Amino acid sequence: MNIGVLALQGAVAEHIQMLCALGVKAIPIRLPSQLDSLDGLVIPGGESTTISKLLYEYDLMEPLRLLATKGFPLFGTCAGMILLASKTTDLRWQPVGAIDIEVQRNAFGRQIDSFEADLEIPALGDKPFRGIFIRAPIVGRVNSSVDILCRLNGSVVATKQGKAIACAFHPELTDDSRFHKYFLDLVTGEPIAQGSSR
Image (cartoon, rainbow, N blue to C red; front, side):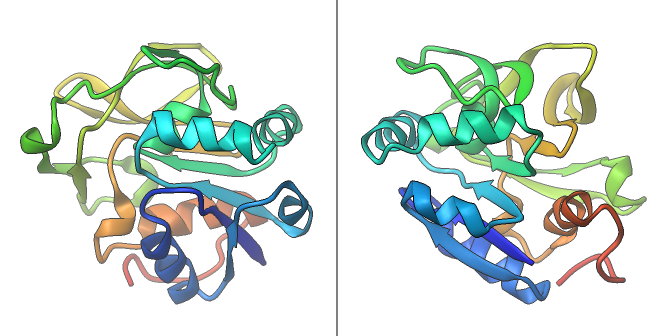
């Protein structure tokens, strides 16, 4: 299985390390031609304005939108959630639109306001998942076709639509690989391995 990690900016190496630990081939993606060989794509956290600008500069935005319309497996974390949304507040460029949600950028505050929290995510099992929130977005409007995977203090912080998932936190910065494994299970349509963490 070949899983791409968008490598324009952000926490690229951490996603690649976690995917490799789960036994899949993780490929840094910088060009549209590299998308052809993929089974799924991760859009990492980073700076959403910078990443969206680079998507246009590298002619990646339209190919990603086309993949989204085809139901291609996509996984966005933090800034990646912003980019996968159908609508985003305070973003110059229109996002990819893989998940029919409206996202508010930097909703939890600035870098200094970063925090961690134990999250209840039934799709990952009974054990809480440690969420790391860094200048994190939150989801405002959620279309009825979107599954809510997790809330924090009433705010939606993880969603799924088809084979596209997005979360406001950074699972790649933890030692818990369950969220990545959940994405890989969506890619394959069946569980790929046993165990809940790396």
